Amino acid sequence: MARQEGCPAEITLELIAGRWKPMAIYWLLKGARRFNQLQRDLGGITHRTLARQLREMEADGLVVRRDYKEIPPRVEYALTPLGRSLEPVLQAMHDWALAHPEARRRERAEGASRSGA
Amino acid sequence: MARQEGCPAEITLELIAGRWKPMAIYWLLKGARRFNQLQRDLGGITHRTLARQLREMEADGLVVRRDYKEIPPRVEYALTPLGRSLEPVLQAMHDWALAHPEARRRERAEGASRSGA
DNA sequence: CTGTATCCCAGATGATACTG
DNA sequence: CAGTATCATCTGGGATACAG
Image (cartoon, rainbow over all chains, first blue to last red; front, top):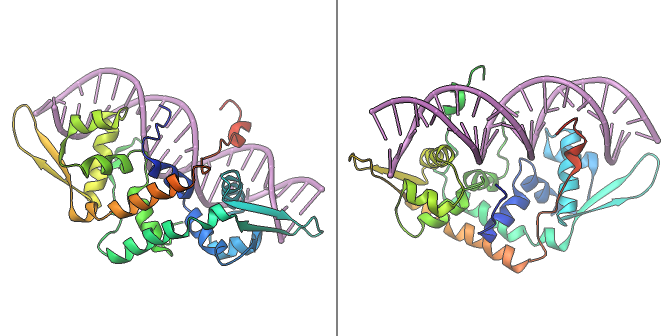
C-alpha cells in the first residue's frame, strides 16, 4: 500500500497539497511572517493546524523557523529557496484555473449512503 | 468551514489532488482506456476506489465515460479537452520535482503520540 | 467485465483548554 | 504570543462481497 511514486509530479503534489499550504506559501512569498500574523492572513485556520502545517513545511525544507527567544515569544517563518522555487508551479496552477473558469469542483454527495453520516 | 477559494491555484489543486488522479490522467493522456485496463495501469488501486475517482473526474468534467452497452460490459474512459488541458500543469509539477531532487516528503511521526495508533 | 454496498482504518482538520 | 495536548469529526482509501 505504500505509495509508489511512479510520477515525480506526485512528489510536488504532496508538498503543496493541503487545505492551507498553497495560501501559506502565497503569503510567505511576500516575506517572513510571524505565527499569529500568518494565522490572520489565512483567515480561519486554527492554532493547532497552522502549527502542524508549518512544522510539516519545515520538515519538507520549504520553510525556515526563526525563534527570537524573546518574551513575549516572537517567531518568524520564511520560505527557503526551495520553497520559493515553487512559485512558478503555483503560478501554473493559478493560471490554469483562470484560463478554465468552467473548471470547478462539482458537488459529490455519493458518500451520503453512510449509516449515520 | 467551507473552503474559501481565495487562490485559484486551489481549484486546480483540488481537481488533481488524490492518490491516483495524477497517474490516472497520465495514462489517459495516452488514449482512452477501459476500466480494468486502467486498474492494471495504476497497479494497486482497488475497484471501488478507481470507480470513485473516475466518477469524481467525470463530475469535474475531466473525463468522459463511454458505455458500449455490451455483454460482457465494455466501458471506456477518456480525457475531455479540459482534462487534457491539465497536461502542462502536471508537466510543471513533474519538472519541478526533477529540478529539485532534494525535495522529498520528510517522514513525520509526530502524530504517534496517540493512544494505540 | 464493470460496478455498487458494507465495513474499517488512518490521516487531516477543527474546537478547545492548557502552558511557558 | 507561540505552541502543545486532547477530543471529535469527516473524508479518502482499502478489503471484501455481491450484482448485472
